[in-house]
Length: 344
Image (cartoon, rainbow, N blue to C red; front, side, top):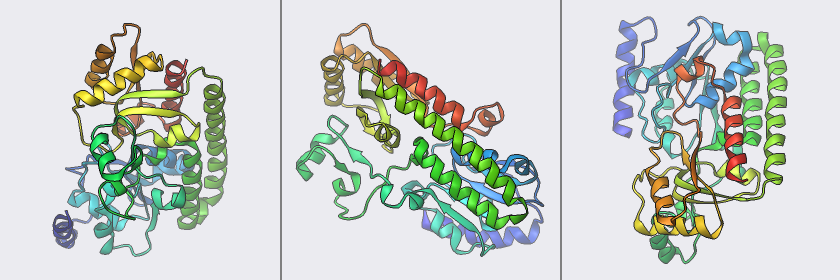
């Protein structure tokens, strides 16, 4: 990857000679909004894009906001194109998650044309509140890791023998409490870069944060009054920030950033047993899943009264979805509706 980035960075200067305007993306599916004479902002994932829409208001339409993963490509497999790096190199604000999937960013920023870029790293903002990926009981490869580490729940960094090197859960936007923090930090950056519209950004942020806090209260109230407190995922589990906010427990086939797609017999059997033991009536999947593992778990349990529902992690939300009316808040509200059923 580093050689790839270095090659692209060296190519940028040659591209700049022959092009006086930005180029369309041919790799990551870049989505652009607005004109080139306003603010230039680059984001990686959908929640960041939507938060900017809310905070900037009308200023958004006169700015150039580049959404790198706008075609729904998974951030865990995304690689920047030359055009992506050009956009980052010349932007005013760059917002990204900051986990292992964004390891390419450091090299991309080394030779940035704009030396005054406001860089917003979400995991860095969380600091000690950032959560490490974990392997919990029953997850794929849990038995092997248990033998190595002598426990049933630990970080992937520890499991891989990396000592103090943590592998953080990258799905930080799935906490409404985190979203409040991120939006306030994005608003601060906008006010610094564009003081002329600072008042607009402050007012919009205050209104939007109130909506986030209100929805967070709805989650808390609904979950506090639910009869069950455990979720079962026949899929990857990118929702640790969400369930930790409301003191829920969970079982899942794979951790959130796993590349696995086929669960072992042992994993299926373990989850099927939990389905019976805990009288769970809903197996959850993640957006984009074919539901195959969930179906196998239900079949192995022998139960006939179990439904499969999906929670939306927003990893596959596209620019088309955003332009069709999908928002961070609308998706989180849909997730709450699913949780109400799963925990009833």
